[in-house]
Amino acid sequence: MTTFDVRIGINPLSWMNDDLPSLGGETPLDVALTEGRRIGYEGFELGNKFPREPEALKTLLAQYDLALVSGWYSGRLAERSAEDEIAAVGPHLDLLAKNGATVMVYGEVANSIQGSPQPLYQRPRFFSDEKWSEYAERLDKFAAYTLSHGVRVAYHHHMGAYVETPADVERLMSLTSADVGLLFDAGHITFAGGDPLTFLDRHIDRVCHVHCKDVRSEIIKMARNRNWSFLDAVINGAFTVPGDGTVDFPSIIARLKRHGYRGWLVVEAEQDPIIAPSYAYAEKGYRTLRSLVDDNLKEAA
Image (cartoon, rainbow, N blue to C red; front, side):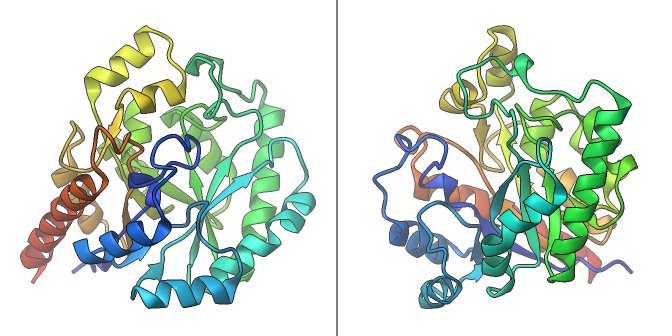
């Protein structure tokens, strides 16, 4: 019988957006932590309002009885050496390791347009086998280093970046070792034209972290047809919490259970809190996942 040992966490994006401070930028961190705990979340991923000193972060999270899930790291391995990246990641890796996080969300931001007013088709790409191989080799070295400190790289395929589509992920996974874990983001892979269930079946052995992001399909179609930027898509409501969009989360959770996934399920949905009130949507995401997880645990019993 497969084990299904999961915990449900959340990213503070439901309350405040790091890329777009105008979305919830005025909301104090303690509001997010208080409300998240009240809803039932067991942990938070980092956002830009969290303390970056290990003991200060540990003290803060303990006040709310919350765990540190993980934290986004803006990597630049597409343009610099593994040695330079290892030197740069030191404080962030230390922060995660000393607070019990076992995965690091790695986002490649070199030449990325995820925060720029450019249409998504202008995203960066590796145009040769040599460039792909060089990147994979640097990523492998970096991932081996973080893993030696107890934290596995969870590579985030992301709209507007080098690794966006299912084909990009396939290429990267084929060129890297198991030290490089994969973050499965249901929303991003759907936006990128992939099928989440096919994606999971293909890469489950490498999936070490899960972002539960739903999508509004009609907004994604508009984003593509009108050549919106990533941030335009976010502002217009491309993403939402599980249970509020068109992603088949019942099948995703069942598939994760079948494969014996162990780790965090993280609600992460960039939205405008004026249009999508933070508490109500964070609660909807939690209740959707809690119900699906509980149903799958009952079936396994």
